[in-house]
Amino acid sequence: MSYHEPTVADLISRNLSDDNQDLAVRYAPIIQFDAREPFLPSVVGYTVFRNNAPSPSFPRRIELEKEGQPKAAIAIEYAIWWDWDIGHLYELEHVWVYLNADGHVVRAEASWHGDYHDMVVNSVLPLSGDRLTIFAEPGKHAFAPIPDWLQARAATTRKACTRCAGTGGVWITPLFKGIIDVKTPQADRLVHSYLEKYAFEPSQKFSQVYPIHPDLLVPWLMLFEWIPCRVAWRVSELERTIPPHERRFLRIAHRGASDYAPENTLAAIVKAAELGADMVELDVHNSADGISVIIHDADLSRTTNGCGSVSQHNLSDLKKLDAGNGEVIPTLEEAIACCLEYDLDLYLEIKSGSAINSVVELIQQYCLHDRTIVCSFRPDWIAHVKALDPDIVASVLFSSVNINAVGLAQAVGAQYVHPAWEGQASEPHKLLTREWMCYVRSAGLGIICWHEERPSEIAALRQLGVDGICSNAPDLLLSDSC
Image: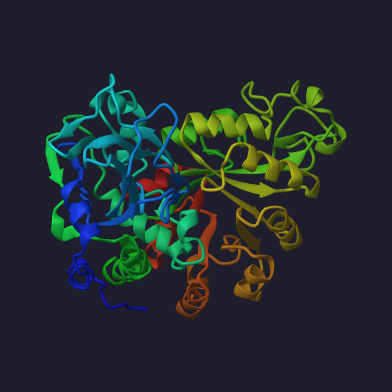
């Protein structure tokens, strides 16, 4: 679907100057950006407070009188909008400037990764005349009063601006939940494809000086109404301009990099990270004492030197087994810790219904909703996962070419379909017909494909524009020829 572009110029042209705008213009902050920063703000919404009240655009209450702080008569909230953050589509950061009855700036605060901080340093506000001067984190745009705050996060920032560029897809904050409705797996892949091209090494030299121009200031409510249309237009433009074969698919290491290390082990996870995977597909069973462990088969004999059922052994006994080359069977919690250390996302296949509750609990405990997809061949298990936590992203696997994939996914609330058709044809990509792809896409669903190690098949799947490909050899998924 194509959309008419809601331009910044159109938005600004509807604005009528008043006393509030005159205040917003006079005290608009000056922002200093990294020399290599690719994205500068597009427009700024303002709200003026003359009484204590909740912010309309940030989860906080504006208090003109605050214990231990100078009394303010007026507060000005600046909601600063970018079309792009290095990690995702759109960014909204905030600055609050507090004025006393004489019109002097007496306090200031600014947003910082979902929270906010006072901008005073050593009892001094960083002012240039009436205007607060602050620094923006490279790529991520959190605000600080001095560069030291940002340089202390240099390693984290570098990762966000390089390897993780675009991985957040379409960003949906609580403010826009149910309002911005264009987030789909395909939209996330389009955003990833676009932003990966803007990956950069931050210089930590804040030489781009950006004074907020009067012409970019509009009342917040006007900006709020404009934003959803702007985001929808951006997604439609990406779909129009990025052909399927150029879209960045998820590189999923099947059972870890299982061609190079024992499957479903920490060694296979680490190897997957070394080979450039985005995610690792791991299989989850439960031990006899109720601990979720990573192993594919219900029986121990194929992948370990043990025998019998996984579910009949306590964790302590499972840990004594050799899972290959001296590796041990990891718990799900150990696998999560390893993935977080090596910056990998998780594609968790539930192999036992007894593991469902612990999988959900660990996703919640480690705040992994944006970093995990839960999948299963059992649609009833996926329905159970979604009932426990509707915000968990899910994928439904199936082996039949005759099944209604869309109906199956919609019935259980899954966001992805995963056809497991690799054994059903010499060129299984041909089973993904144009009609089938359009049907799935029109339902807003993503498509993840079987594990594949043939470069010709990987290349064919890439041409189709699928959202993810599993492989025992994830290095094959990086090849330009694929």
